[in-house]
Length: 256
Ligand SMILES: O=C(CO)[C@@H](O)[C@H](O)COP(=O)(O)O
Image 1: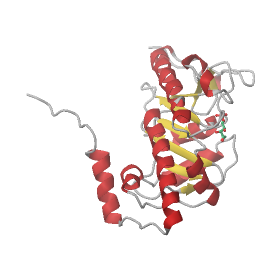
Image 2: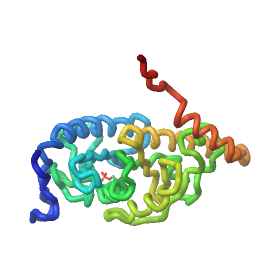
Image 3: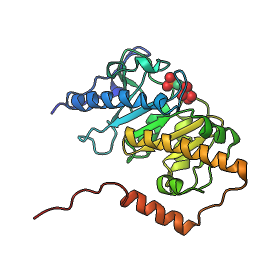
Image 4: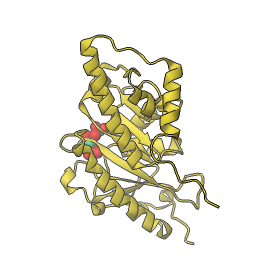
């Protein structure tokens, strides 16, 4: 098995790739490019973004380094129209956000995504949108209160607000991690910016982004009618446990 080239050991011109995708990760990276490109199409389909706003990434694990230090991420290039997002257009970076493969600048949120992968090892997908209702809550700096069974199911409580952070470095990532590290919620509303969601893979993070917008909208509408009622914590816990462990199709039991 070939040893991956550490990005930091290879000098390169600014903006150029600093390392190649290791041969043993080639198939996994290509498969992730297919998934991530297709998932970007879900953002406009669910009306979570306008123009080129928003981004999806997925972690590619390198099992030869179980500490995750050589994992890669696949993300879209910055400022590219959703219609032009194809698997071949995808960009590969290491978890320091250095370019590994691709001929365009990575998403402006790459450092934020990379920070999340570095600090939350179970996270395999990250999504950022500017979906209208979730972003409206972010603009107010107010968590979405857990007043719906769908919220208890998916988020296990309120959707929290993260700190205001400037775009471009890992400040957003730090805010996401410090807010979500001890939360069951896979979504955080970054103050004055918008939702960032996480999941075991990119698809799960996209689902969390869709659900986040849905409940932000419903709770907002409910508020127009009066103050919605919180679900008691015991019921939130019970709903969350059922949805996370029982809901949907369970694997078939082993047969003798
Ligand atoms: O809000 C931001 C920056 O955080 C982004 O969502 C941009 O709107 C899209 O950036 P790219 O992914 O195209 O660089």
